[in-house]
Image (cartoon, rainbow, N blue to C red; front, top):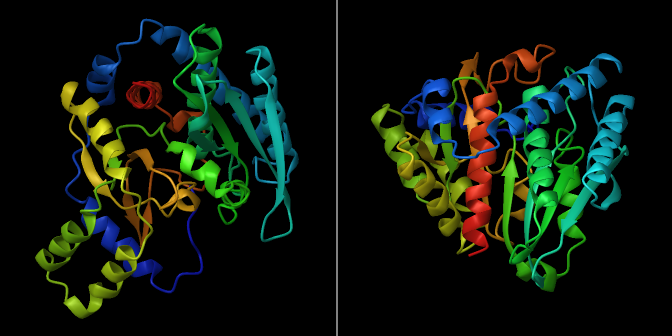
Length: 344
């Protein structure tokens, strides 16, 4: 997950988000997530996803400890994704681009043909890491979930209602460049046909707080109330609220939030909804252009005046040891639930 470096209000915003999230309730993943997972092929999916993470960790170990954009580790990660698509009998398209550092990245997009060629759903996860570490939770975890989804669809004989694009973005950690380049390449007609963009980032966190991105745009009022309750002067927090209110919105964002919320209500799992982290990952380029959502599995804590989304975030210790397979299962199940709703 990308952390913006250039915003002058970053410290204040990080503190504000931390305050907003302080009411989240963490839970035991072994007890709750496993119970909510109805898949009959849970064991196969678990083995598959954990195997992918082991491969990505080995790639990092063999290539300077990371899988960053433009590095040998990044290129080896891309090749592994291509190999998995080939094994599933699916064609992967490579889409090169240049980021702000003039490094060439490679997006990988795989098409699952739907009944309609005019409508589409995009599910995306970035596969690059930061240079400081292997990026197994951030975000080999999201890639592993998408590869499991890809394998599931490859086994099916029934086409989804909408054409499904499974996207693996490069250079998210450097300016969210891969998804930005992709969205810029789309025509207005193509954007209008996209029913949803679903982002999968950092979904392997142990003992996470389950959070749902703000789709009905009610987080501003909630954050204002939290600021006030914590005794902050309005002059101090109003600029943050004003900047949030200016974020692009889509009228169908709320329906995606409702779909995710219904999943957790049905499975009696506590969540924290209306979390405002959509500008910190590959959701950003899609905001306001298409309906957008993401599942967020964080175990956040403050490190000085900065918010750390999960233990070992952007560090060399972001290894497979910090990943919980139950969190991966939950992410895959929620993703399948969302896609099922969208294809009704």
